[in-house]
Length: 237
Image (cartoon, rainbow, N blue to C red; front, side, top):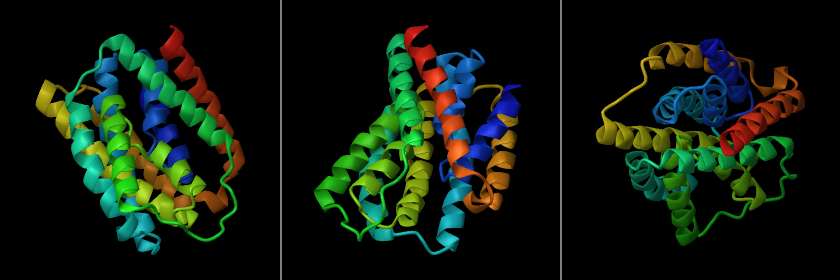
């Protein structure tokens, strides 16, 4: 059942331009996986789906190296540090629960209308990258769930360009966070290979169909409900 849930999460998230870490965490939380297994599994699944998303966005011509470089330069070492650190169980639950609740709220909001671009300054990009990199490594997410709405709200670039940069941002941060975790613990969940196959299949199918063929609003609302339930469970259980 967990493998099926991961397939559905990967499929739904890839349809709306995300890799799915918060959804994987929600599913693994609802199925009772231990916190020390959730973090590396979510990062590994994120790497697979983010790779597909990055490739598709670059092929479509939406990627911006100028926006991506400073964000990634600061985020990768911080994501590695976050992956190496292990929060106490209760602190981990609260941190991830808040991330899930934020993610739920994010999916209930529609992006503002586009009106030009205002790319961030180098110090601002480095600061955002460092903060989101550390958060992604600590919680097992890729940081894209925060970067995408921030970039759209501040009008750093076109929505599709921000989505493309976020996909690559998720990829490099998830890889760095997982590397830090493996170096520290040298442990990996036994269920990861089966979950990885499910994530690949779901991500490939969702990316192929794309947003134009599916009811965007309904998918986002459904994801919001699942994330909110899992977030409340982590914080208050």
